Amino acid sequence: MKYIILGIFVMVFCTISANAQKVYRTSYKSDADKIIFVTDYKSEADMIVYETKYKSEAKPYSGIWFWTTYKSEADWQVYFTKYKSEANLKIYITKYKSEAGMK
Image (cartoon, rainbow, N blue to C red):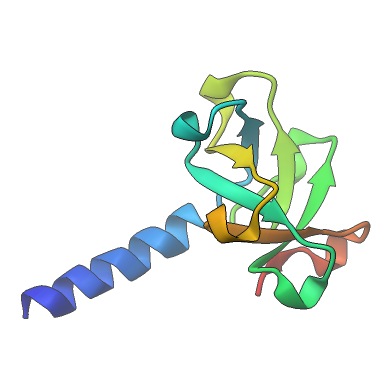
């Protein structure tokens, strides 16, 4: 019973946290909520991301990211890695807003 409750909690937490849209890029892996690898292929990605210039477009569950200037405004602090094996989230950056979202 404990494992079922724990499993449900983990799934809910991952679903909620995986959809944060206001993002701050950190220079330190230890500060990051997510370690991200940018893939060249859409098929390898966990999330397809569209980068917007407007904070109002960044909505939960949309895959539309707004880059914040201040750490305190961000839903996520992210660190970009060169190594796919280090990442806990692989993203593909698209030019089209309609493609954005979780896979």
